[in-house]
Amino acid sequence: MLKVEQIGVAYGAIDALHGISLEVGQGEVVALLGANGAGKTTLLRTISGLIRPKSGGIRFEGEPLGNSSAETRVKRGIAHVPEGRRIFPGLTVRENLDVATTVWRRRGMSAAADLDNVYALFPRLKERASQLGWSLSGGEQQMLAIGRALMARPKMLLLDEPSLGLAPRLSEEVYRRIADINAKGVTVLLVEQNTVLALEVARRAYVIENGHIVLDGPARDLANHPRVREAYLGA
Amino acid sequence: MSQQFIQLVVSGLAVGSVYALVGLAFIMVNEATGVVNFATGQMVTIGCFLAVTTGLQMNLPLAPAYVLALAAMALFGVAFYAIVFRPLQDRPVVTVIIGTVMIGIVIQNAALITWGSVPFRPRSPFGRQVIDVFGAALSAHALFVIVVSFLMIGLLYLFIYRTAIGARMRAVAQDRDAARLMGISVDRMFVLTWIIAGLLTGAAGILVGPMWFADVNMGDPIALKAFAAIIIGGFSSVPGAIVGGVLVGLAEMLGAAYISSTYKDGLVFLVMILFLLVRPEGIFGERIGQRA
Image (cartoon, rainbow over the protein chains, first blue to last red):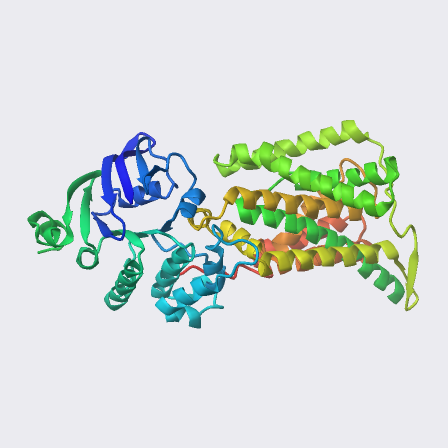
């Protein structure tokens, strides 16, 4: 479904990604593991069109994304839940969800079914519907960020550190919801530092270090790989 | 005494609501783009003179004259965005600000070439009509200014806070990248922002014209006081702009009558400085907090 081919990204004179290639199949959950500053977030931002790569290309459903804008890519079916959640602090929960329907909603169309779907996944959001975004707890903000991305009716979800700053119980809850979303047919590419959680949900994973992919394979194999165990699982 | 007081309050409210319109033009642009538009005053001048052209020079009836002038101001806002803001968008904020200062000077001199240095006296739809309220002779035009300004502000408020497009504009203002990731066209929202700024400044210019003279240097003092108004009201708040504008208008009119007409402007800025010292976030300070 998504094919990243030899992507190179530079910030000024500093190369952040050196020819990264990876693939995500229809319906898969794929995890991207790595330490801080390895280039995981840069890769997601490149896929969603916020950063222009200096070399390489990205194909989505067989079609090259080229230099298309972030808005166009949302329309094509890629929704990105950014690092740090980035919900709109001065919009209510309901408004946060509503603005994400921009790409498909035309005059007179209703988003009620989409809204029900999100509220069914995250009942807390329904209780908080008229509260301003900034007043939510970290976990609620993460739920809102994911719910908001779903409102765009994506085929693929890019998740950047969904467990960051959450208590372990909440992280597990969020990951259960990610599995639910995947079960409904949404493909997921997720970036995570919490390797244990990520490898539980993901089918395959890539390990990224200093802008290079150093390992990839089925999640189960990677969980037992000595290098992963030593560097990321602390075993 | 009390009749004079009522008259002063009404003219203070009229001038104040014009400041509120201009203050909102500052706020709309600043919220969406993070830049203070220092050509805001010149946009007021252009709005006023466009109505001079349609209403006096072309001698159209005032209703179509105003509509035409406002439509031209909306286009002017789009042109400002396309020519000045868009090309400088990714530059440092200071560059953009200097850009708006520069374009303000260009606009002012272009206005001087186009309309000349002799001031015009624009017509009011109510002429010099006076309405008697409890013995106070109130200018019909001043009342018209108050009603129209508050109507515009009310509509703007509904548009920003009650419509889907308004929510998108606020989303862009709060987090540009996140808005992009939600599929919102940031460009389109910016164009809309500048159209609104054009309409607000245009309306301010049209309304203020018959109260004062239409002079090519009229924009700067109005913009300065509108700026003082939003500092007093709270820099990013719609009610703040209204309250700040009205306070500045009242301080100016009452101060001129009861304290000193020479120092009426000084009085306004003294209030602003006091606010900066004592309550820099303004009356309606930032309500949005941050939570990690």
